[in-house]
Length: 425
Image 1 (cartoon, one colour):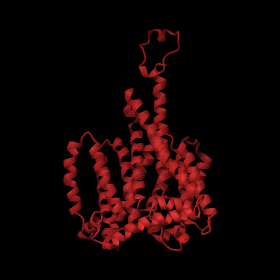
Image 2 (tube, helix red, strand yellow):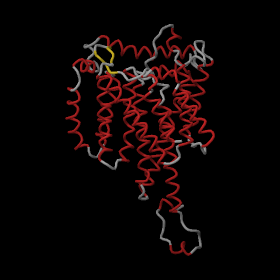
Image 3 (cartoon, rainbow, N blue to C red):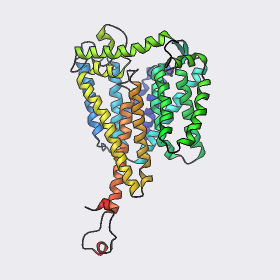
Image 4 (cartoon, rainbow, N blue to C red):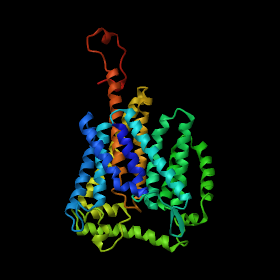
């Protein structure tokens, strides 16, 4: 069953039916998921992973459903954005009932990175062959297909997937494993360069610099950054350098300034929609129609508040809170394992959770200039982290059972050495 999920991940990420449109008539994604659900219902032992994130995800789905049902501008039959999020929720359900072992988690997380690497490589190849668009004074790279191909969406997606390489490092045993990760990171950096997405560019810089600053090897890594930074800058075309210079020099391009003002306007327009429908919003994807325009919010806060109302805000905040709670629990359990000399057993789960937290932070910062509230990765990453939290808790419980004192009055109890202070009381 786990490999059926991997196959669906590839279909969802690479989306070959959007690249080769003749495949769209076959409804490959829909047929594949229906077959997977039939197999899941009939032949798989199902045990739902218990986690608070399930409640948060359900609340957010309910908020989106109410926003769409009660909207004056759309309905659940015609709203593609709402339907796409329900597809993501179905995959979330499958992951939470199928992925039960660390081996399964390693397969599903590694497969996500490999599938995205294939998508990146395909997109870069087509960019070299002329598949690009011209915007804001530069030729900019776009992804293959149509769902996530827009340069800002594409750049955000690249940045959000990069932290998932952290748990992959734990699995490296051979040289080609390290070479794959290095190649993936270099390809990701190159593609972000070529998208011209200023938000993605800033996040890549932060993702490279911040871990170095807090690393105990910072004195070795800082010279590397000082060499690679200028090398990366001068590897870009001049038009792209000018694009990124607008981050700190507003005099270079008035169009770039207008785009930045558009993000701010999207926030305030979202607040207008929220004021007009404070409880459940104007409907999923209805930011523009509710204001009598064709533009989207281009701002996460404005999108969630305006389109889903107070219910959506609370539900989305609960999702973010669950990311934080799960990571805290994983961190505490990992520290316990380290204290007992078993840190290596929990390292992979800890790195999955850490990678997810980094990805979520990147997504939130990107949300200042992008309406990414309904992207698949909120639930995908939530599922990965929830399973990691469950697995590391099982490891702690197993270690605690091994360390449990023998029954009182037994010979083993009389001869046992005193337990660590952690276990007294």
